[in-house]
Length: 189
Image 1 (cartoon, rainbow, N blue to C red):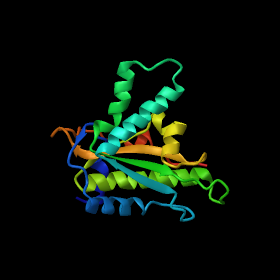
Image 2: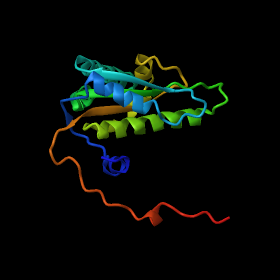
Image 3: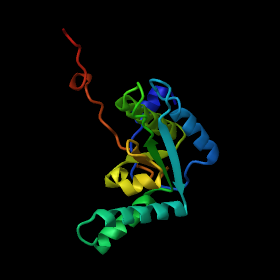
């Protein structure tokens, strides 16, 4: 496939199963992510791979975090949902931004660089025959979860990238191409 074909056909796939990328494939994915535009060459992105029993431990971390901040005890249904969240894919890549707050490169630009690294990662996942879903939610912002990934106050979890193989053969949907006029204009000063 050409680069434009990959760009035009990539989409988020919520239902993922085995196989997940091998260590050799992961190396390619992270090299692609590491090529993201990065003003100041700070490389503010960090990636943590979670597989196997690590997914269950992440679910337990989510449950603990939610219990700490809930004003009422969690229901059995809420607890089960939190425990099951990381089991939606065979691999999760937690992407975090390590922000240098006293640097000449603004924190916003550092965070945007991490977003660009995630986009490169998602495109590489798709190009190598796998699928992914970029998720955030309350747990991405919870201090207990951030602490578990050794993040300081200004650092952030940018996303939980769920990675695997589409669970259904017809997971890819036909997506209509929007007319450029809906989101592009020529500036006229």
